[in-house]
Amino acid sequence: MPRRFGWVRASRRSAKAAPVLEGITPRGWLAAVIVAVTAVVTWSLSGDWQVGMVTLAGGLVALLASSQMREERQAEAAALARDTAVPGPAIEVAIDAILEPVLLVEGTRVMLANRAARTLLGEHVAGEDVRTAIRHPAAAAHLAQSRDDEALPPIDLVGLGALNQRWELRANAIGGNRRLVHLLDRTDAHAAEKMRVDFVANASHELRTPLASILGYVETLADEAGEDPEIRARFLRIVLDEARRMDRLVGDLMSLSRIEADKFRQPSDSIEFGQLIRDVADTLAAAHDGRGRDISLHVTPGLPMVTGDAVQLSQLLHNLIGNAMKYGRAGTPIRVEAAPAGRGMIRLVVADRGEGIPPEHLPRLTERFYRVDAGRSRSLGGTGLGLAIVKHIVERHRGRFDIASTVGEGTRVTVMLRAADAAVILA
Image 1 (cartoon, rainbow, N blue to C red):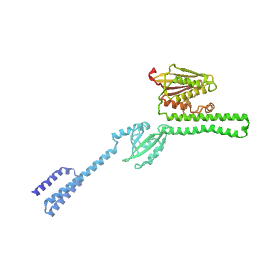
Image 2 (cartoon, helix red, strand yellow):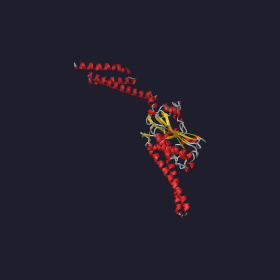
Image 3 (cartoon, one colour):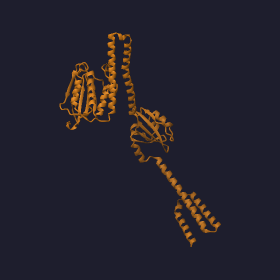
Image 4 (cartoon, helix red, strand yellow):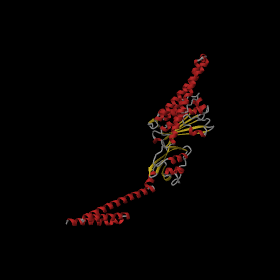
């Protein structure tokens, strides 16, 4: 009985294996014949047919396992080939979601370009050689020397897209003879760094000029020239003027630093702006050789309060009205207006009748130390920081700032500030 059951089990295993044998390759059939011959030889030598059947069944199981493993490896290779042949929709969506320009490159050919890359380089870049698609000699040289198995350091590209644009190019291998080329816009960062360097250089120059003058006159006073009362008085007056100039410059630099430090903290105090304007006008009444008498105030009665910082708003008024007094023609009015402007805003206008400013200078007036006429500005006591301070104060108060000027007629500065109670401002 046990022998018969063993035969039945072996027969069942052979029956189950029969359908699977249909997919075996010719080489597999040769292996099957060898297994069968081996089983017959084993049966003949042992004299036990059950041992031969076990040998046959074991050989067939090993053959089937080998065949299945080979088929799985072939299936994995085919799937990998499909995945590496053409990027799938998921890859396209992922790359297109990146805000910076990104290219998927295989070898030297651009396989995918996201929306930002197509906007920068053109809609035709897909399928092109990456070295001609980017159209920059430094990028072409960099991509030509990079290999798929190494990551080169990023490089800077100047003039790609626009003459003053700066980009950082990164090319990273991602396997399968592919690289991801990423372009990062560094224009703003470069401009900020240049502004910082220029600011330090200009501040050093502005401080060194009066300091050199002070040192020169003090050394002269220490010599025989100091014995003459008239010369001594004139030199001391110059030293005092230069020292005051340095004091104003240091004060403006400190003010600018404080305003920039607070620029993310919006003021919350309620300020009586109309009264603040009148107080500043009274303070400037005797300034600039009596030019304060030319200030003409037009403040709407019952002007709503503004949300702001009283010290900074006072500084804003001093700078704007002071500029109008210095650069307007003597004897001409300096008009200061303040009125509701609708949508919860209050409009401040300071206008003078001076020589005006050529249009090409207007965009740069709020740059630190920028002057239309450097000699005249210094002779009038300007530090070159007044309008830069005004711009930062307006930005901190979440307002708006505009300068309009006509050569030969004068300049008009408009500042929009938020009212403390927007409900009282009629649209």
